[in-house]
Amino acid sequence: MLVYGRNVCLEYLKNGKGKKIYLQKDFSDSVLLEMIHQKINYVEKSVLDKMCGGVHQGIAMEVDDFEYTDLEDLLDQDPCTLLFLDHLEDPHNLGAIIRTAEASGIQGIVIPRNRSVEVNATVLKTSVGSANHLPICQVTNLVDTMSKLKKQGFWVVGTDMNGEDFKKIDYRGKTIIVIGNEGKGMSELVRKNCDFIASIPMYGTVNSLNASVAAALFIYEAVRQIRE
Image (cartoon, rainbow, N blue to C red; front, side, top):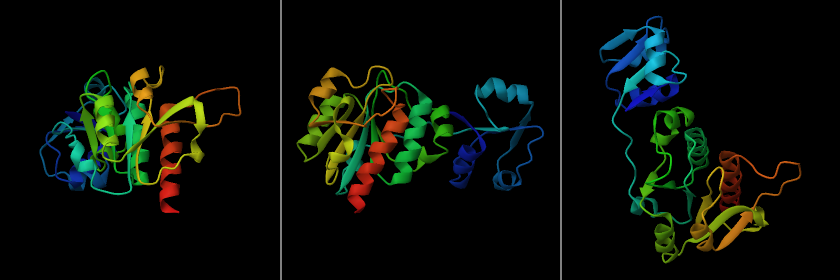
């Protein structure tokens, strides 16, 4: 997998995981240059533009594909707060959610294996490397996974504009917070398997929030309650 951007590449270099490295010919970041021990491939900016398809900040590198965590490895803490993402499609949303989730200290994120954005170069860059510090699990079926965890004592909080005030929900203990698709929200099957439906109050003319913003509000309300 090719990753790009200074912060992401710095995280990989810190952990000795960078492989083949590409630098723009006038690259001058002394911190990164001092950390690079591999052979450097200097290229024109236009070459990096074509390789990365995004804002690369003059550096890109080849790394191993992202390693997802096994579900069971997310369940060894109590309280345990997990974020389930119901078929998100935008890698920028996923990256922003990962960054917030890692900063908050929640235990992990679960995403479906099919019809959903994966952890790719754009996600890694948007998360500023946080994806390498937060357990992220891919599962075949979100509903089956929810049902399995409910039998282990988890409560599932779905998010929708027509629900109870999200601050009135008890997130202490074992909790799954579900964030729906950017356009369609939660699927009907996921909704039916939620124990609670929670909403963020809206006071303006817009009746919805970006998925990453909504996720941040739910995450930090859960963390606030747990740390009280």
